[in-house]
Image 1: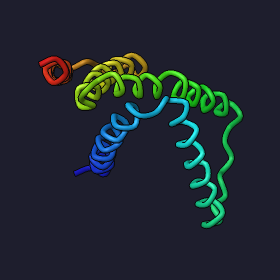
Image 2: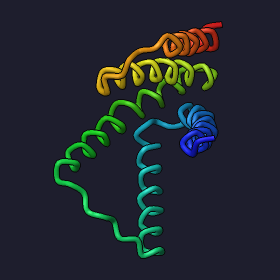
Image 3: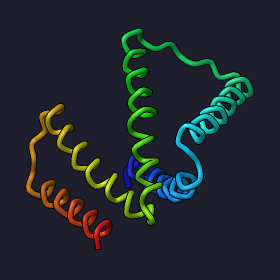
Length: 141
């Protein structure tokens, strides 16, 4: 098994756990309240790691600072609030997850095809159809 597949499986397991926890938290707290605590705890944890291990961050290109800033803005002002609200409005976080993940897989696949100019193969399209059908069946049955 390729190493990236192992990492993907680990990420999937913990994303599932995160989704269930998010479903619980989103019913109790406003997104901004959650964000304040989550970012504060992450910030403290990150700096404890940096100071404790003596890690010295490598330099980044000046052009990448804008890309990183753009990503942070998208994540914390659009993506995370939307996911948080989806979990808060849905009785079952599994259903909300399917409606987040299935379209995201399809859009990422299509954008990758466009950006990397990859050929679309028949089996890719069959897989995309299964993802959409499965997401629909889980979310709307």
